[in-house]
Image (cartoon, rainbow, N blue to C red):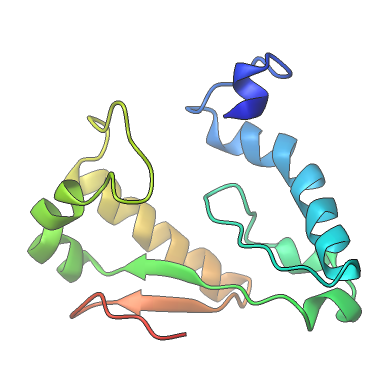
Length: 133
């Protein structure tokens, strides 16, 4: 959002694919710098491409822990009201009207396919949302 608000890009938060292309070259270099400086960093969000591993040597990969949280259609259907209720826990969502059952299921099914396709670690949330990494 800082890059959007600072007008360093004409993209908006609705331009997911373009934002990933724009942000990933910056984010991956931030990750490398953090590793080189022996710091810690958590990067959360949808702007990490599923083929992210290709941009790091083994030296960096051994220092990176990646997990994609994926909810099953069953979980989403059974807990949709809770998902909506707690949507603002991590960040305030000004307009959450585009979070509808069908699109949430599609997005999570896509994420699971991509995780499998690119051999990314994922945590499948099916019965309960209790995660221990």
